[in-house]
Image: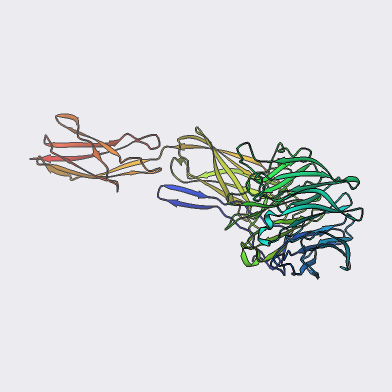
Length: 575
């Protein structure tokens, strides 16, 4: 763990640069940043059903499901916003589904055969209404001043994913079967303006599951927009893990394990004009939640290794501010965000996220506070590069400084960079900003000519983006050299010359072939070419045709990335 106040470790991903031979490889992991604070609580149960946040009294309630056996009892745990446990409620039957009244005075809990309420300040229970038997786990939603809940039933727990599920309600105080039903453990989500979502998980009886929006005003339940997602060939079907309304109710976000994060227009469930960027490679969507103040979007995922499990970012998908990225790691954190595992406080000051281990037998509650203020950033002093001149095929470092207002970040920030040359624009990944603000972008230009380097800082939830900075670099051909060793004197019986050919920059595609020219008193002529060995050495054997000084000129013509080179040696020939 990083500090005593953060019992889970955020991913701290650094630019890894490895020089190998004549090449440079830059491996870049996604950026990660520290939240203002993150308290973590180990939940005292081995199953999970629901989370509900009471922003009036600053309570967060988490329930197990414990539906494996019909006589099982249930557990609801209440915490304050600092993560301190206030009480543990043992329910007389398994509990699966929580919802709060509009004024946050009552917590509704779905039990096996009835709905129970609990006072959110005293935690005293009260019977609300009997229901049809639930053997698989309910979903609850309070919408339009009425309580709605699902009633799935299966004779065998192992068949619950395919259960016939009914949408019921306590409407005007009376248990009501609405008539809406379908297969699978249907999910509910209440939203603003008396609207409610119902979504169908993928199951054996629903190859093309649905998402639907209901109007719950005036004690009625009217279905409005609905959508199935598979195309005519059956591809693209919804694999629903979670769903959420935006703060103003105009958008719906869906965690789709097949697709990622879908952003839809509430009125007709069509795709929004602008969606969120894809989740990191290897992350499977598991949960979504909009903050109540409309500023933030939280996207939970199941991922392994250093791949982020949670992205916390602006709710506006056109805002390019880099998200906060969280990697949850094992026994201190859990390994992934649980499906339907996130809720915000009404003011957006806290995100409550339930994580689980890979097998779903342990659970944790994270309380995350996004920063409330953003500070300005700027690049100062321009960019420089080394070595100078830059050479094609050799490592190049472009250096600069990022200046930050406000407090220092908890983990290093990142800048991103591109190189634009005659073949287009190339992404160079990210570079870490050091504590003094300096950074170095590593590259290996592979084309001779002008290259334009653009360095960007996209900002994060604490810092605003900086204006891009640009630097022009003239990339030259890599130098080559030829070194010759020959005897000062030789006879007409023969002369042997040895040498070494060296080429900097990118490795030659083939071994160099050198031109050999001999000049003596009889004139100048070209001898047989000589090929350079893998270690750069070569040998020239010649039978001189005349006495006195003989000059040997060895040359290489160069190529697109390498300069030409030449060397001359003289030998005095006797009988």
